[in-house]
Length: 322
Ligand code: PEP
Ligand code: MG
Figure 1 (cartoon, rainbow, N blue to C red):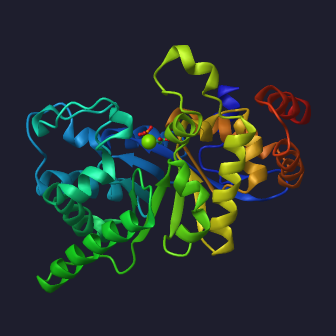
Figure 2 (figure 1 turned 90 degrees about the horizontal axis):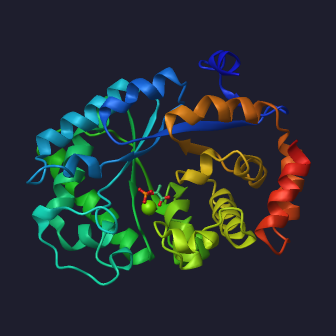
């Protein structure tokens, strides 16, 4: 199997009936790029920048960040790179920020909420990204967006930094796609409105499942509720993809679900455009998708959206694909 997969390194990802989807990788540091290229990644679908901020005792400087973003963009050689702005809080703490302890950190002051408040941190990161943008195909994505107001405010700050850099004579790429993670149910439900203003969506199922089911993603005792194949989750995913397509935008997924063998047929059927996963899952997923027929997976997806339980969905996928 491994040798069969290895032959697919330089191939595009096409279904049996010729539909192209993009298989991208999730990375945490520039060092991960070797693995992305060795495994035939068509892009980076999620660069989790928080690792730049972790395991140290002060914030990374603009220069340090610029170097890291430039290295990733150059390393991917013009292929798309989606960089997520700082997603700290929840399970990821930064001791040197000395934020007060919260009762419910996953529902608290984190990610874009923190960035909109602590604007120095946010603006430094955005400047580093804008300066790096001319070295490759950069797309910027905001995490944990819950309302359109948050998106608009974050976008305005980005625009402000961009205009200041241009006025100072810096080169900034003409066009940088700007998207959001869809990982909070309110945003999935309002995806039709968001789609008018964003360039793309990336569905963050790791959090979307936990917030939809009210089940902590780290808590084993409630893991029975943490179900990617639940019809409720699949309906939210469909809403997001359909909303994007209605506005001519693209929809990706960067949660673990995107690389999951049982989920992939459904996501193909629902029309997902980009699947971002750990690099080591890419070739296996490519081999799986080559054997799937998109039109058949569309019928399967339509069927499971009307099912009642997760186990019915899993049975239907197994029956249709084995
Ligand atoms: C997600 O929530 O699905 C996601 C990709 O982000 P993280 O796992 O970093 O929260
Ligand atoms: Mg998340």
